[in-house]
Length: 176
Image (cartoon, rainbow, N blue to C red; front, side, top):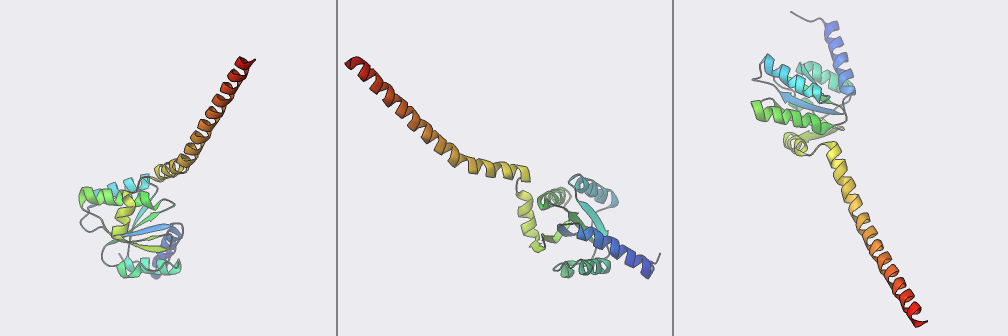
């Protein structure tokens, strides 16, 4: 089945729209995955808010050019699929690396996070990070610890002052 030039242009336009809505893009090689495994990967990624799109490299290059995303062209060779993520690049990286650890595929070639290229090794490190909410909780705890210590010191000073005033009161009451 051959696709016409108009159909190809529609595919490029649709892919460009998907790319424009994605803050994170991971280029993967899905060689060796059968349809059932790709469907399972798509299901896991969808649960994390990520879309997994199998693309033709020439159409992907055009769509990337249309959306002014640079740095991925050299990695578009062979069977290619794009993982398109929104605000949380770690969620997509975690699903991809966990799936690759489980089934030895797909291979992550490169990524684009907030317009900056990231290597496969950096994506694996990103996947190892705790979830965003946990990181925010850790940050909150780190910010709260010095304040809690300061309040503890002030509380100790207040108790000392109250103790001194009580002793003074008792001394003056005994002197009369």
